[in-house]
Amino acid sequence: MQAKIEQKRSNLRQRLLGIASDLPMHKLQLVVTTTAASLPALAVVALVLLLLATARRPCSFLDAYRSGVSLPSPSGPSRPRAAAVRAPSGCDIFRPGEWVPDDDAPYYTNLTCPLIQEHQNCMKYGRPDRGFLRWRWRPDGCDLPRFDAAAFFDAVRNSSLAFVGDSLARNHMQSLMCLLSKVAYPKDISTTTNPEFRTMRYEPYNFTMAIFWSPFLVRGHQPDPRRHMWDIYLDEPDAAWRDAVSGFDRVVLSAATWFTRPAVFYAGGRVVGCHYCLVPGVPDLTLRYSLRMAFRSALRVLTAGGPGRFKGTVILRTLSPTSHFEGGEWDRGGDCRRTRPFAANETRMAGLDLDLHKVQVEEFARAKAEAEASGGGTRLVLMDTTAAMVLRPDGHPSRYGHWPHENVTLYHDCVHWCLPGPIDAWNDMLLQMLLRDPS
Ligand SMILES: *[C@@H]1O[C@H](CO)[C@@H](O)[C@H](O)[C@H]1NC(C)=O
Ligand SMILES: *[C@@H]1O[C@H](CO)[C@@H](O)[C@H](O)[C@H]1NC(C)=O
Ligand SMILES: *[C@@H]1O[C@H](CO)[C@@H](O)[C@H](O)[C@H]1NC(C)=O
Ligand SMILES: *[C@@H]1O[C@H](CO)[C@@H](O)[C@H](O)[C@H]1NC(C)=O
Ligand SMILES: *[C@@H]1O[C@H](CO)[C@@H](O)[C@H](O)[C@H]1NC(C)=O
Image 1 (cartoon, protein in one colour):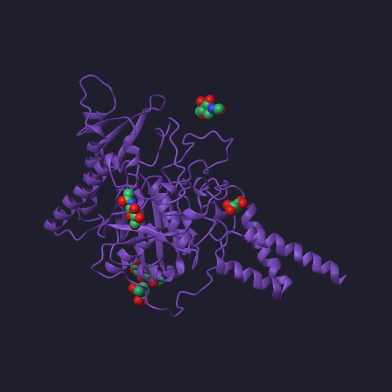
Image 2 (cartoon, protein in one colour):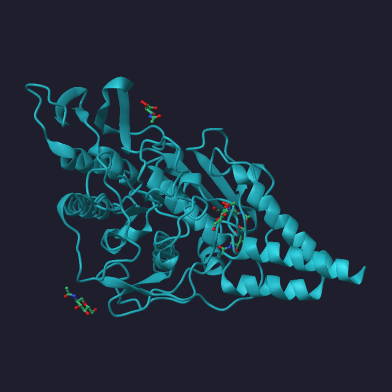
């Protein structure tokens, strides 16, 4: 009898360790200690882990909440805590800098965070290497403190944050929710079922976070889906977010990737040019032009002020690199198979990334000058992540964003970022921005 129990206990332990092999070391330690201590406690842990592991494949990144995986907040909001670690105020946390080894990473896994979008859950789809997780961004001249969920909640208490952009904005927000899941899980309070428009609430902190899908920031539509040609209305900020963000305290604005698609540009209701439309008589102004004008329109409406308009802080996040496909374009066999970052002297921002980054920085400076001149009360800050991310060709899903037999458009995904992964550094940076710039 005793032997049988021992055997059972040992099997359970084996299984748990198998499941838990991806947990960060301190979590693993916890599990092992529990194993030795008490079987009933262990069974509960095992059940939770199994629930997580067998959860239905979510069709939206927030389905995990609806399926009941959401766990109660492990610590109360009023828990006393040490002050947040701040980077020195004179240090540019964005650039220049380099990625240095980080033995403590990763800070969550697909088991501790049930919110990872399928296509960014690289470990689930068999990515064999783990080395790409163990790096942190170190700006020249200072350390960038690691994300601190409690400090983040302190900084955003009684406020709201909106993300406006494409799937990289969603990637960013999911990384943030995973990092915050150490302290709390949000409640989905969205008023629509559209997975691209979600509103998440962290009630104990009176903090609301939302995402608005708007890949061009301005109105864009595809008149005939078979032709792969878009119409982009460069002077019309997208109604998908324009009015809805007015009540938010902060907006993280980003876009770039979608501008690479062939498109006809409109302004004042007329065709003014295009990107790769090959229509005689229509000048090819390239995506540099459409990106510039779209950001100009979006920033203008955000900084215009006036009744019912946005009055908070605009955070412009510069583009995530478009340049990590090697050996071909994204649809011509290009892939990203590196397993470690570039050193700072091995590569630098160049080509299209450099051009688009320049456009964004220029439009940011222009909008900031205009906002200051008009005294409208909006603030603008630049979240200049591009240079750091250019060094991380190893952080994308590549072929581990789906099962090998699955027929997906972006078979080798060198655009999005694995979770956990280097994109988590965006939130290390975001927290420092909030600490420097309380509004
Ligand atoms: C988490 O990743 C592991 C591989 O590390 C995989 O076996 C498992 O299915 C993934 N679980 C979830 C819930 O994504
Ligand atoms: C929540 O925050 C808002 C400001 O965003 C404030 O007006 C409100 O009083 C806060 N509510 C609570 C319960 O703290
Ligand atoms: C949040 O709002 C509540 C209610 O308005 C207020 O009592 C509290 O001091 C606020 N906290 C912060 C950090 O602003
Ligand atoms: C890049 O810098 C490293 C030290 O950080 C050095 O060992 C290496 O030789 C340099 N490589 C080049 C191409 O300059
Ligand atoms: C993959 O899907 C596309 C469009 O959905 C289709 O045209 C193509 O034939 C499919 N390829 C395979 C190998 O199933």
